[in-house]
Length: 377
Image 1 (cartoon, rainbow, N blue to C red):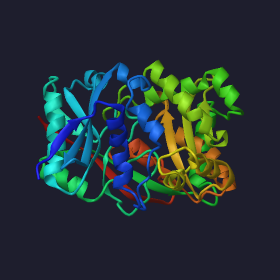
Image 2 (image 1 turned 90 degrees about the vertical axis):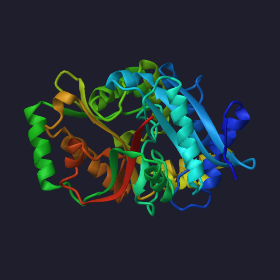
Image 3 (image 1 turned 60 degrees about the horizontal axis):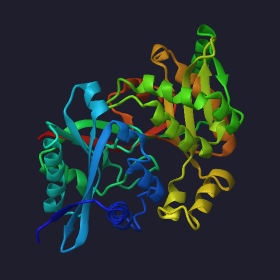
């Protein structure tokens, strides 16, 4: 039967767009659903500050009136200007195992981009780097995280059959918490702390974060640290406001470590939190009526044995000097005290040696890989 592509144009259709993923992966032991309200805010121009420099449309694939796929078409004009490209992104793509469906979705994004002067397609990518990116190509039997998207093993096979090529790969690591801080790690930490006159700053209250403006300073540092990375576009102050308001309320400040120099400038930051993967599965995409309980339980009362490394950023002029060692010298005893067994890294670019090298003194396991695909249109 032929595939019909329908552009999302009403709140009811947007709800179906979001909910399709929940239904499609219902009962899957590895998929971690996003919260519906978070997704609604992400796709709303009134709520998502990225729409100041992005445009997007969302599409459903239907067969005999039944939804069989979905995709978002996005142009990040800021990223295109930064990297000198004319690229349309595809994101939040899901489809049944039918090449006619996946082909119709990708062709729709190509046509949408072509009509707006774009010359290539790339994805899966979100509006910005703060959204989930990359299609899972290894680790289909591993639990996903709240910062990533799970997909079935046939997805990358479809991309290849549709003539898409690898654009970039990210790897994800399990980093096991050592019983003691590795000796070489401690030695490097001591040396660089003295050599560069660095000190650790711990935040004491959410009020301090709000009133001191340090949350905004942290995201400005991320802007500097991530600037050279694949597809990155600098966050605006409006975006930074959005992320500070989104993340600060749920952080356990014990797992936030800031490195400052003698002038009290932030030169490094590490932010982590207890994994919410199992709690989000139990919440089933809904905060109400009982989803909040599962999330609060994971954060406060019965923490899992796994933590997520949300952000690690080092100011460019301090990169390659061992500042990461100082971060984790502070954090490891905290992880031990809180009973964590291992950390899940966020996706790390395979080609980013500086990030990969920071784990050399730890027991690690690369357990997932995800990929962005590209093609000319």
